[in-house]
Amino acid sequence: MIIEVLTLFPEMFPGPLSAGVTGRGLASGLVTLRVHNLRDYTHDRHRQVDDVPYGGGAGMVLKPEPIFEAVRARTGKGPVILLTPQGKLLNQGVVRELASHDDLYLICGRYEGVDERVAAHLVDREISIGDYVLTGGELPAMVLIDAVSRLVTGVLGSEESPKDESFDQHLLEYPHYTRPAEFEGHAVPEVLRSGHHAEIERWRRAQAAERTRRRRPDLFDQPG
Picture 1 (cartoon, helix red, strand yellow):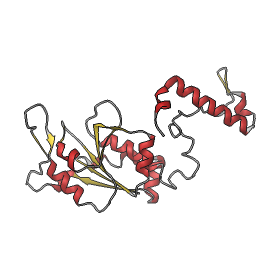
Picture 2 (cartoon, one colour):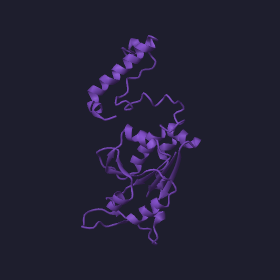
Picture 3 (tube, one colour):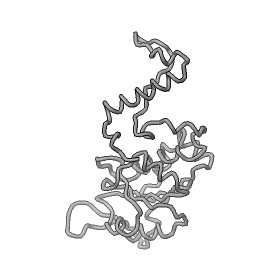
Picture 4 (cartoon, one colour):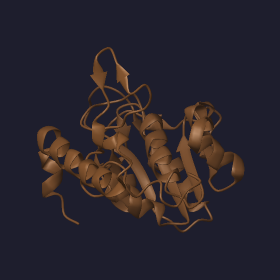
């Protein structure tokens, strides 16, 4: 998979994406990250990418021209995504759909926002990672890249690995334990030490369902 990122701060990438599973995916070539500096698509000597908002107000707004030019210069055909608080909330269903594409193009907003003509006439979708405001779209882009990359075939190293994870069946993940069997008076559930695989599977499913009911009952209402 090829993931392209348009940003005012290309030095932020790959950043934490260079470590762990995602880093191995990048190093192996299973995932290719291409980062573009928005200022490279300007044509004035100041390399201006923002301007004051029409109608007044605080802050600066990213201009449409360099963003349109950057996106039109790409060779990929996958979705163009604007990372914005106004977007659809990123969840595992969205991640799975995005991972089905051969390439993605991510636009990182900054300052007060992005000229609305970008959202209205250029991008395929707007995505948010939560109901809070960050200083830019770079961190949300990294979250999306991490989530999508681990679903690319071969990145995790096992085809079975993603199937039982949190949210893939609209359930939170079951509790995990490792050695020692007892720690400060707290013991690992006996069923996990029994070696009875069918019982262990039933226990895990029951725990996942109960944990979801207590912590995230809204997941039961999600379609699909």
